[in-house]
Length: 440
Image 1 (cartoon, rainbow, N blue to C red):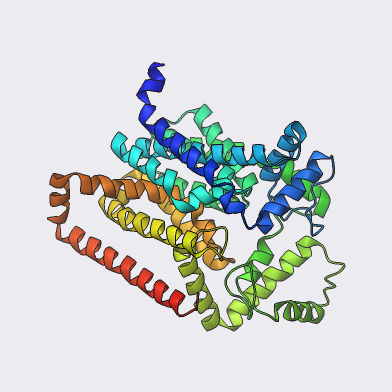
Image 2 (cartoon, helix red, strand yellow; image 1 turned 120 degrees about the vertical axis):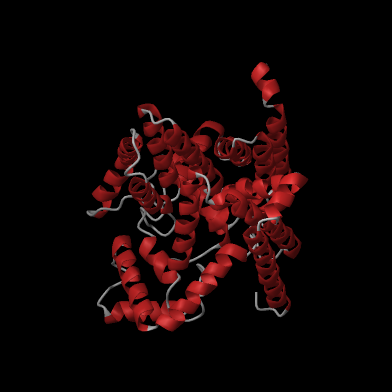
């Protein structure tokens, strides 16, 4: 009871966030389930019946396994009704609020900042929406936040057990979304270089985390190797994702302009690849080859696409549908508030604390991936709890008049803050204009 009383403020925020998510499940499914939701439901139903892990396209390894496996366990225990999976997704959304609070408290040492960060996560429209959907985001964000909490605690007090837990959480995140595979390799390598001269056992604990991570991935990797006869650590989709984002018919997203299918079939014929007989790993390798050829042969168009994807990654509303403009307006408003305050928080504290290094690395890596591969607005969702921490720092700054005055007495801060506010205003003014012109 003493523990409960100590955390009643953040638990209230978590409860409000959970209730908000549960209350919106019905509304957000008025137009039915998204294509990804239907795919995960279908795959989980097959697994619950004892069938093989094969998606609706007959492919064995394009989907990361953990979310459909979890859904299949629920279907076996509770039947194929979707109420329990939806409650689980909302619960995971509430858990992300709590984990965001813990991470913020560990990083900043300020309970006030941590509570504001939790509040941002609780009401940020994109995080609310995707907690109600039966997609990977709700589970993935929990594992990402847990990994970062443990990583920060490992930095402060390296121990064998914490190092193992970092690797386990990172492994579960990777089995939920394959893109975390590249990030964790990048993160461990970057931290090892940055802290190579630091005394103590931190560098060694990173090695322990890497080993634990590999152990978690081993069963799925062995399964893939047995099926494909080659190394496929998590997913065979990477090459095709790269092609979708880099071809003459690319829109930057999963949806291509008319003519892509004919172009792809023609390219396959020119390269003596029979698409009807090829394996998914062959198609992935071929897609990667075509994407690289396109970037090298048309660098100007590829650069324009990259800029467009960067813009979409940061600005497009994170919604489950393009047809509900009111919902999209709410999402955009949430982004503007988050970005404005996060910019002030980043100026105030972002690069001054060692604990923020992994977060900055995550922002750089995942944004770069969306520029290199195909982009969807929802792919920035795992970064938004980090943005919420910076935004909370910005709110705390404005809440303290003495601190705010000291902040703006520094000329550099004044210039950076004004530039950031003008930049956000300009970007969203341009976006509004493009929307009214029918270009978005």
